[in-house]
Length: 491
Image (cartoon, rainbow, N blue to C red):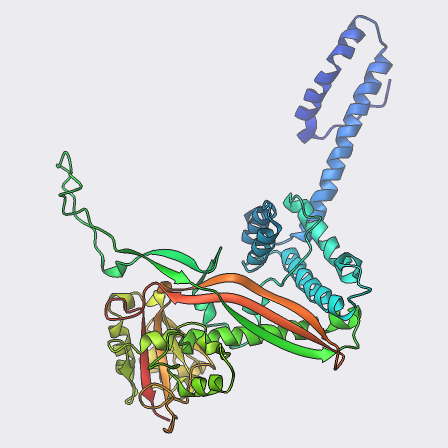
């Protein structure tokens, strides 16, 4: 008889069920048709197979824990989004959703590593394809691709992903949102919505925070919806996103190979991502597409574009920004006399849109932040502002419960009217208070990088593109007061 095998407790049930498969042999054993040794040999073989499977699962689980040591991948938002992305049949939609997934937060180091490998491969692929168009054999021939595949296969194995073999990156995964720079903070205040088309009509309910419900008498047996006063008609509408394209560019020597590009990838990404982020942020703040008195509201933008040829090239003409909305006649506040009371009058201009401080955000120039906010007597000393007084911290993260954003694109070259005006002393600044809930970005194409070889100078040019739009639910006015501008902050 074969040696006795010790079976782990957790496998007793499975073993008993598996042994049911030997029922016919057991019947044969009872009838004396087979020997005890033959029957036990088959049973032993079955159990040994089960134990081998158990060992494989143990090893696989150890590998999984090595890849995902700090989080349950099944509950990770990026993992969930990647799984959904791989279900897409359309390769273009799949790549867009993969890039969108990489924008989501994660605690899983492996997902960060594969994103980094994905981005690096995209840049190396673009550069090598442009530098060696005749001899380049495709992305699969790159050493960077082998690193990417290794990570991809390890991660996809434990995410139960399918159809990953053809996952070849065509663009970066929105790295500009992670660049450590002052820029980007304004854009990240607002929700991003994917635009399936351009233009894209977005339905909204325009009643805003002033609409109320109706008390209903519970004793009423029947309500006629045509006569019931509670049958309130919502003011529905559409606002239209139209994608605008922003471009960045950097040039390097053509004497470059795969290893050199890999070493330069961080610098390429950093430069192009910052250019794109700065362009979006300055337009979010200073954009004016509809025109003020026939031209951009700021003369310095009009002069710049007049020197170029149509269409306008300055990014501040891509869409109408926060200053454009906040300088509506019923929403602006003169800040000639600086005081918290004057700033709070900006919040008063928002009406119902300014009630919840968690929905609001302040935007200041660095000069005004240091000169007026941090040193303001109302927040500077402990007896007024407590242990978070700026005399101790040197900074102020919130004002009246709303976050403060300091942007290098908040202008300091404005006239006392709130605009940059030709022939005038443009030395004043401004401040903004916005309800971030009522403004949104529409993303049509995420941050992508392409490369081109310049033959005349034997250089390699990397160009980044992004297509998006920025819109309020409704143009700010006395009714829809989602932003206020404080102007005439004197030097």
